Image (cartoon, rainbow, N blue to C red):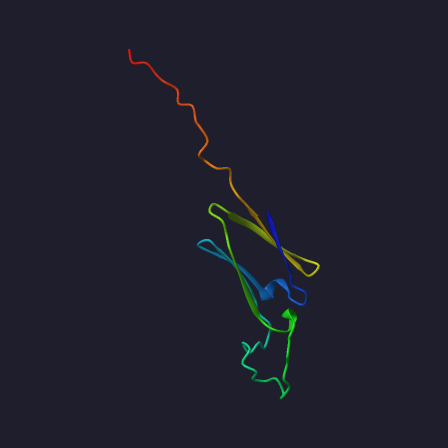
Length: 100
């Protein structure tokens, strides 16, 4: 399974991918980001600022057993690769030994 997010304008050093319990968290930070309080905006009001102009956080809840095994930033896209290991509740044959 792969989760892909558009990250145009961000470098790998500005992105962070974390797994906390069953939650995948992706953070992006811009240099000089003021956390959305409007300080330092030189008296301009914005109706919308694209993702490349501000920091962000995006979270995804992972299904039970999902494992994140890698993240790649390529051509402005962040690919986060995950897999679900084979379930362990398969029938298993147990050999029977005889006592002598």
